[in-house]
Amino acid sequence: MTSHFRSILTVATTALSLLVVGSAVAAPRTDLVLGMSIEPSGLDPTAAAPVAIGQVVWQNLFEGLVTIDKDGNIEPELAENWDISTDGLTYTFDLRDNVTFQNGKPFNAQTAKYTLDRILAEDSVNPQKSLYKSIESVKALDTDTLVLTLSKPSADLLYWLGFPAAVMIEPSSETTNATDPVGTGPFKFSEWKKGNQVTLVENTNYWGKAPKLEQVVFRFIGDPQAQAAALISGGIDAIPEFTAPELVSQFEKNNAFETVIGTTGMEVIAGMNNARKPFNDVRVRQALMMATDRQAIIDATNAGLGTPIGSHFSPSDAGYEDLTTALPYDPAKAKQLLAEAGYPNGFTFTMKVPNRTYAERASEIMQAYFSMIGVTMKIETSEFPAKWVQDVFKDTNYDMTIIGHAEPLDIGIYARDPYYFNYDNPDFNKAMVDVSNATTEQERVSGYQHAQKILAQDVPALFLYARPKIGIWKQGLNGMWRNGPVPSNDVTDVFWNE
View: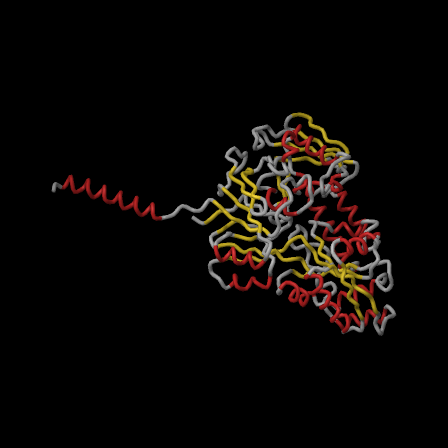
C-alpha cells in the first residue's frame, strides 16, 4: 500500500468516524406537550372571559400593541415605541412595518383601530371592556401611526393594552377566531380536538425572532392525579400550573423533573364588610390581621406553597413591596387592640365561605386563631358562584368572607363605589387618582407602592397570600415562566437543551 493511498484511506476513515459520532448526537427536540387543567371555551380572548383562552393563545398566537413580560413589565410589541402627552390624554403609537397576520393580510394602524373600536363599541362583548373606557377616540393617522385620545388620564392603560383582551385581530377573521384564530404571533393554529388538545405550529412568516419550537400541543387534564401520572409517563412534558400542592414533593425528589415555585396574580384575602360593626373600626381590623398566622394558612391550604402578602398586591407585579411586617402575627398586640376598640372580651361574627377547598381550609384555621384572642367566628358555607356572588358580591349581606382575586393588578377595587368591601378611604382614593395621572412609569410604580402601604395599615381585608404558580417540567426544558403576572403559557422563548 502506497503512502499516498494510506493517507487517502486515513482521511476517509476519519471523516466517516466524525459522521458517525455526529449522527449519534440527537438534535434538540422542537416539539412540546404542555398540560393545562381547564380546556378553553373558545380561542378568542377578545370575546370571552375564561382565563384558559389566553393561556393557550396570548403571545403564542395573538399579540398586542404592547406586552407584559415575565417580570410584570410593559414591553413594546406590535408598537415599536410610543409617546404620551404631558397631560396624559394623548397616546401616539409608532407601529412596526411589514407585519402580517397569519392569513397573509397586513397589520397596520387601520386594523389596530378596528380592534380597539370593536372593544369600545356599545355591543362589545369584550370581557375587559371597562378597562379601556377612558379611550375617547382612536385614529389612524397613516399606515404606521395610531393615536388614542383619552377622556381622562389613565396611566395603567398601557398595561391593560398588554392584556389578552386587547390583542390585535384581523377584521375578516373576527367571526371565526373562536374556533380558527388568526393572529400575528410566532405560532399559528393547527388543530383543536375538543375535549383533548389544541395544537399550534410555527408561523414561518413571523415578523420577529423565530421560535425554537415547531409544534406545541396544549393537552387538557383536569384531575391532579392524572396530571401527575401524565408527567411521569411522558404523556406531557410540562404543566406550568400544577393544581395539587400535596403531590409536589414526589417531583422535587425526582431528578428527571424541575419543580419551580413562583407566584401568580391571585391574592387570597378575607374581605370584611367595612360598613358593619365592629369592622368599621380600624383597630378591630388590625387586631384580626395580627391574630392571623399567614404561613399557617398557606401550610394548611397549599402544602406550604404560596407567598404571604401584607397588601392587595402580588409579588409577580412590578412595584411589589413586602408589607407583611406592617401588622405581623402578634396575638398579644391583637388582644390589646381589641380592648382599645371596646371589645376586651371579643365578639362574635359569621364568615360566609364559598365552597372551595382553599377557602374552607383557610376559614377553619382562621377560626382557631381568632378564638385565641376571644373572637368567635361562625362558618357558613356558601355555594359558589351563585349564592356567594348574590349574598356577598351583589347584596353585601355578610360580615367576612374569603376569596381569591385573580385579575392582575386589581388593587384599585378598594376605590370602587359600590364594591363588596363597603370601604371608603379618601387617602386611598387619591392615591389611585395619582396612579391614573402618572405620566412616567416610575410615577406609576411609586403610586402603587404608596397605595399598598395605605392598605397594609388600614386593612379593609385580611391580606393572606398570593397563590403559588407551581411549575413542573422535564429537565432540559428552558424558557418557561416562573411567575404569572398575567395568566398565560407563553412558550415563545421555550427550547430544549442541545
